[in-house]
Length: 284
Length: 284
Image 1: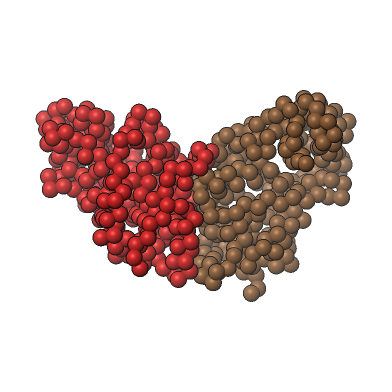
Image 2: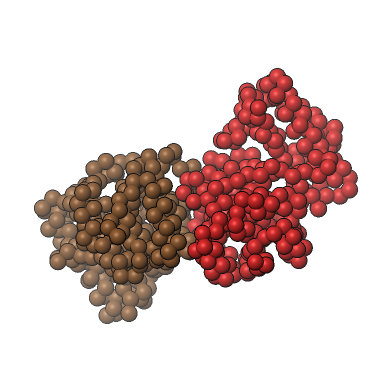
């Protein structure tokens, strides 16, 4: 079948109901558009494992803070549709804000114990917005599998926990971070970077690789690893403003003192006005 | 087909998936068991409108407070199954607490603006527990329609709002309160009443009927109606301890001053150690 684009919940669902009637396995790739190779890798994973691949494109306002980049977040629908088509997507769901939020949601969904850590400290509203949008999309699409990038590791494990706690009959797949040749994690927000910031940006992943090596070689105390990350960032991205650098238990996101794998090394750094995040899961 | 009983999510869902494959319309009646004529009326509504009727029987611990009646809440599974069978139920879902909560839920679901009013003032945890269990059951059963009693009016409209906000593709039907011959709303907790308390209990509905007449005849200020309810309760159930008596907007549950219909008249009264609730929706 050729790719269909749906802007309303009703028209999408009529297709979904039919796909389900035929016993098709439905895969969902939720995105905010401005697609890049990271998104394509999620679509490809869905394409391999599912019969019907659904991509949602929705810049979800509830996960942005009042002074964040909601208004200037890139919107490239024509290019997105072309990329979806080339990647073999079956259904694209591109709702308006009014379609997704006809009224402000009175319902709140969150995983406070996970949402309050890492990015949640400087962005306390963020993951409640993510959970709300994810729950809505899960109910609209009712997929068998949903695909998320490890780039947004905290988001992915929060959604996985939400799906598990609320018994959504959906398998949450976390796909590896896709990187530029110099190691920078693919992100729509990379387009905000000035040339100088773009040159400094690979320092984030370099510092995480240094951390990985230290942990795998001799499991030093967390403080020592964090200092090494900070030292590298200071050298490599001297203008960068560190939001956090943490070593955490990848299940609970609680800080660890001992660095026995598995350990999540995660950071957020502001280069100019652009906040970048990255993380590596150090495992045996 | 004859009635099936499922104790695990997996075995129930295999039946649900099949019913859905055949295009059957699925109705869910969520209960805490100890079924009475009120529950039967919900089952009958589902039986009329749906192809597959599912009744869940689960005393949900997360909606009970630490000093409430979770331990002594009546459990009458054999009698419940017989009533379900006689009412033409297809699938009964009777999970254990461990099946529903293999670990404490890290995910929270709530509708704070509605949950903080009426019963939510003296039971601030209650509706978060209700929303969590409802969301779980909705995902486990994936019904087309779910049936709730108007007896628990606040619960019903909170769940309806949750379903709407989270795009559950489920119609929420609110069925009329079923009453004893003397007007007492059917409730599992009526079984806790001593003979003297049982004699006083119809005073709740009597007072609400007085309120209804006052509003329909001359729309007096809310305070006057509330005083009339309290006066009747003082006469008719002198030992009763009033938790609240309120006139509220039935959509927002906010207190009203003017009593132009529609108005919800709602109350909670403790007779001995038993807390009873009742309400009437006064509409033209």
